[in-house]
Length: 616
Image (tube, rainbow, N blue to C red; front, side, top):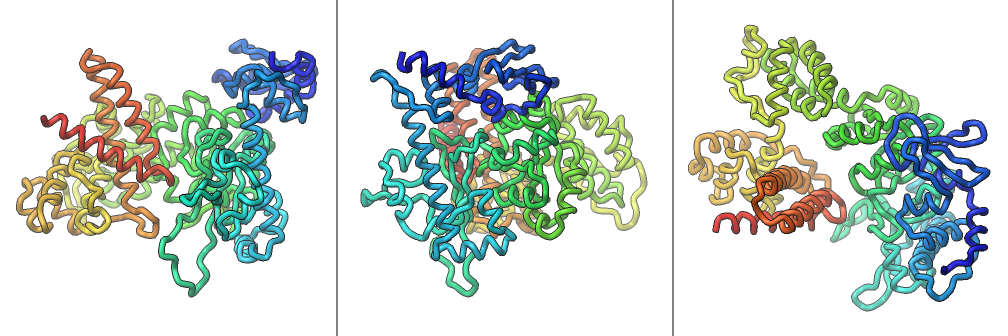
């Protein structure tokens, strides 16, 4: 054994098992013990119990049991000795190990130590260094006083190549493994962050594990840089930091989350701080990545109600049918906070904190928010408008896995749009089966005469799944400078859009493309010619989200084809499984700040090769 038995006993005795487990489970005092939801299996009622005096835990549901060492092994995937080392490090106990001891624990301890030193370096720099004056002015302009800066350990990365590296005096290995720096082409150590306000990221136990840096706004009248940098730079994945398992602010918010049984999820560091400033200290944020199931697996241990508090536009864009799966799997309730148009939590917290608190109190269930959003954007003054809004709402409702829930919302839509609920049920069934919904006249759904100022009839109710393709065609027509080299005809799964894209890509002008395209594709091109793209040109890559949506649809289709072939006994199992895994991993990287462009390029090349191979 690498550690003497008496030292293992000392580690057990020095570990506060309630504090340890409380980093991952919301524990409440129940007599002489503590109870909460079991982290090892899903449950609605707490069956997980901790005895602080004996240092033991037991679940009456799944029958998992053990001490602090067992808990660390089960939750972090460590072997016995590494679990002992981790707990010894927490308790400040020096172990006397034999020469067989592995270096994994020491390596992790060195990484955590370097990160802690870096956070302190950045923090002290912000508090007292003359070169941080602009950073302090910026933070004051955002309403951050000294207490806020100290509470959240905010810092300043100096505008220099290697100030942190010199301060740490760490090896190249430690610098790169923490993500704090790297070795440049000249063989010299270089800092990862430069001239940025630093937001340290901590694990639930309060240990610094990563950093995020925000660039300062440009000085009015100063020339713009030749190569604009992203607003935020975040630590890469490291041995001590996983973005899909980390929530910024959880270390500070745990107590309020447990007390309220509610957790607020927002988009960034400043939003989290804004919620704390508005007396809502139960907010967290993802760290440069979209919400993932791993995040929900962490949150369910602390609260049953999860409120998504994005800005008005992002709330809709982040809507995903997988949330319903996660609600059911983890037995949680997901709601959406509806903020006033054009505001984000940080703005509202400064201008009207009471309005922010009210918005959280009035947060709607996830599906209710999405349906209301669709209906509010519809035109209810005409038969055509009501029919179109109903069809779009049905497409949203169809994603929910529960039949009873779907039917309740369908009744609401029928009432709101003055339509026959039986006909809407038929539409819903078609959406669930994947059948394209086509009607001869939209007015026939409502079965009522139109007024003289009715909207024009289109014959086909637009399938929401076709919208990314329409936006891509608008870009190809109106902004070829942005779309050139990134749009391929194979990206379009809709047949008419595919033929329209082929015509555009093979002709010099839009007029020539319309002339050469088949009638439905030509009509589509004429339509997008008079429609403006809806992209946000203020972001670094306005085209990326559109291509990402097209690629996601294409990957889903290709994965389904491969899985169907495997069920039929066709194809090579190992090769197909590898391909499916690679495609799904690439899709997860789409839209991410650091990996999105690379994932897009890889997928475009893969589908081009796949198309070429299938045509041989």
